Image (cartoon, rainbow, N blue to C red; front, side):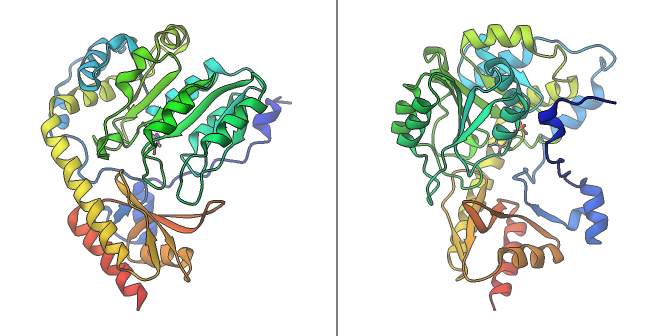
Length: 362
Ligand SMILES: *Cc1c(COP(=O)(O)O)cnc(C)c1O
């Protein structure tokens, strides 16, 4: 008999995301015809310099640099913090898992503020943490007194607080005053800034060197179009870096992802122009959605717009769009009843989704 750890044996099976090619067969449409606005991916793709760089790289048969020195130096200039504070990962997702594993003993408390990104809860449970939920309100505002109370109740066992700014799925920013208050709590505060490049606000990463309980997570997946290559990073206090260097898988980031990160940072002007275009499309999408009677969009600082569907079925809307080859994210869970999230796309993609939404109204 194979003996699996009981908490893992009890876990619900993972619902796999269909590969893009399989999806294209299911929908009976060529991949180029699918308007994929369901996962906040970047429709411009990576820097066009990347293909060349990957094609000419001579050392694929040599193991990567486990310390990622060149990429971390480039990131230090991009973020504005010393490289000794930067840990690179196989996506920001890997760093969420690492943080849980180095900070949690079984039964330690992780505070999560849903509705938000799903990986904090998933990784905390995998590390045998106890997840205490302090839900956001209807406007997705974080409940600061509720978090303070949850920390008190945890009686010294609260270790980690996950905050997301801009938050996924609504796109709202964490107010500065909330962050200040939460940093006074005796636990590690992780601010996930996966979408900060799309916000009209500076990253809080530059404060990490002077704030011993602040971690900031960032990623190349969204702004740089590298979701498929998996490259994220964390800006960490030095005490955490010491632990992470001992703990991390030596070759967690492969050479293709490393090259992609370096090329992106060398081609910043172009990628930032694309980010500006996506922000403009996000705002145009938001304004168009405001004029559709059955939708209630929220203003967003990320590359997507969340909307509640009023008086009609979001599930049916999701399905109707799918039949036209338009994919959006559909939600039906606590705090996210009857709602959809639409990623900002190319101008013609935004035109198409808006036309489809207007047509569904009549
Ligand atoms: C997409 C997303 C991530 C994932 O980042 P990867 O680098 O692709 O692992 C992390 N946090 C949030 C809030 C996200 O929406």
